Image (cartoon, rainbow, N blue to C red; front, side):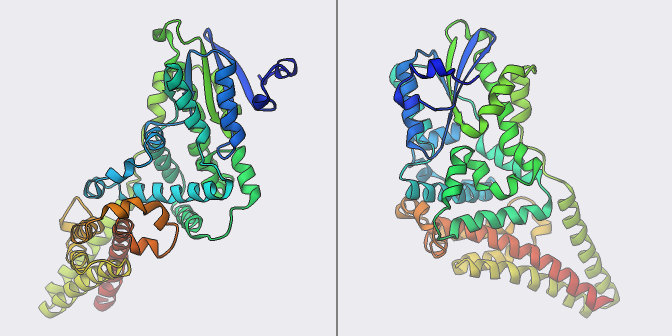
Amino acid sequence: MSVPETEATALPAALQGQPIERVQRDGVEYVVLGTAHVSRSSMEAVEALLDHEHFDAVAVELCDSRAQSMRDPEAFKQMDLFKVIRQGKAGMVAASLVLSTFQKRLADQSGIQPGAEMKAAMDGAERRGLPLWLIDREVGTTLKRAWRSVGFWQRFGLLGGLLASVFDRNDIEQSEIEKLKQGDLLESAFSEFASSSKPLYDSLIGERDAFMAARLREEAGPSAGAENRRVLVVIGAGHLKGLCTLLREQQDDPATKVAELAVSPPKARWPKWVAAGLVLLVFAAIGWAFHRNASLGTQALMAWVLFTGGFAALGALVAGGHPLSVVAAFIAAPIKPFRPGIPAGGISAMAEAWARRPRVVDFDTLRDDIVHWSGWWKNRVARTLLNFFLVSVGTIIGEYSAGIHIFKSLF
């Protein structure tokens, strides 16, 4: 429930008018503060609550990776670029960097770093020696579930929206900042799509409400004993209503619910089957061409090499790749069907990172550089990620172009 008016009059000035709900569940009182991610008053409200009331634990709307990023903003400088590419995480890292540019624009315009209230809660818990509970789902899992919750064409819209948020030079509308004060950072980054797509909204907001409610119940369960009877919960205002409702009503076993929502959904198989089917058809056509005429078969095989290798190499060239990464793209793309594992974009990107090893200054200026178009080509870390993406896209275009050309020449 909201803080009663009679109680509110006794609260410090920093807490007057702040959205605070108090939920009793299983002998535990959760004092849930809804915060604005770009508001100094929210940061002051967190500090005032910790000073004004006694708590046995503090819970924040953060996952391990986001908390680590706040504690050590320079940690990403230790990123092993080769490991990121080998593990297929280049796309996720690029998406995280794009989201960070949205945060930076907010910080530059509002004068306060998004998430400052979460940092205040973590620092307050540490100073008082209180247990800190990180209750949000891993941001990587949330992004994957959001990505896979929408259809093929909607994904192009999401990519376009993300890219627009990076390169838009205009100030963020005040109405958008006000919306963020009542909403969620991830939802705001995808606001246009989240509002019109229930699956996307559920992935970004609804599922996380359920996850956080289960995490709170899990942390304050019977095994926790009597020491966690009053818990301060600091979450974005956009989660306040949903979380409190679920905290009161959720009946699932908390550990089971957490495990269910923490799983990354499996990739759809049909795109791979379609791609594999296309490649099989193309190579069947090449085999048929050799059966008819050796010269015709040679021409078909050359078309496959030139189209796939050529478009992949073009992707590396557009990314400003080193000659070695361009050659690597040209060689890797045609043999992709016979070489499972790292895609052509990964091989080209690793060649780029080897030929032009990122310097310390590239990591130091990465977040600032990628705000501008030219920064993606100037910064060696960003250029390597760009190389990965454009070579991968070029390879796909080359495969389809080769197939169309070969079938036209045969039939």
